[in-house]
Image (cartoon, rainbow, N blue to C red; front, top):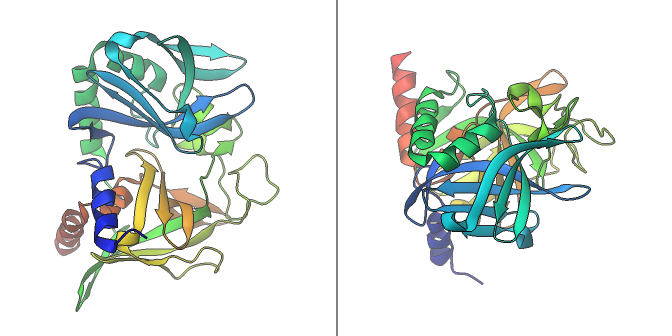
Length: 302
């Protein structure tokens, strides 16, 4: 069994310096995207990275489909479309990869496949564009709260929880392959009850809503709508597996609960309202103290 202290070291080493769309990959500035790798009949999910020197895909649901190429090994990167599916085509090595890129909630980059191609041609320019977009992302007032406890502050936020890795689908199909200018509408009409609804988020269990409480030492789900997905673990027992700023979902591995998808948002009638998951990513990572201070300052200013 991995000792608790070593697990925490591994967790922090796996996280980027800034848990947003711009990050670092082995110490190098990078842009990170949530992405899908297209197969003949389905796709697998993971994170797609681009730096000034590399293009890398870390497959989460099918790890063997991961790849990592130096720039001089990449022949071409360009948008493509076939049979109603939009994708990014990467010709590298002796293979051609067709990648879907998740839309961001605010649709800040227009044609996101063309945006990745621009990043391949001019990484520094694209990197600066993402940095500007990050600066514009602000969580709605009151969405995050800080509760002061004798053992330290507790950050509270509304979340929607699903078992495993949540695939989004709606009227235009799976969100990762939706239209080139897709934004918030691409996540479909996500409902709290998903069993047997092929046109909505694909889950074998119902979604759960509640409040995620994050402290310097613990992560807990409270006020939950059910007991199907209990979360109550020490912070050093979790690992963030997937997530990027501008998108709604974060996939987290809990030591006892297993792999779950956390969405920043809450119930809205029979559906849910989703928000950019950047605050959630930062809260679960080493930026927790900064997030607490930011929320405190906003609360005192109101």
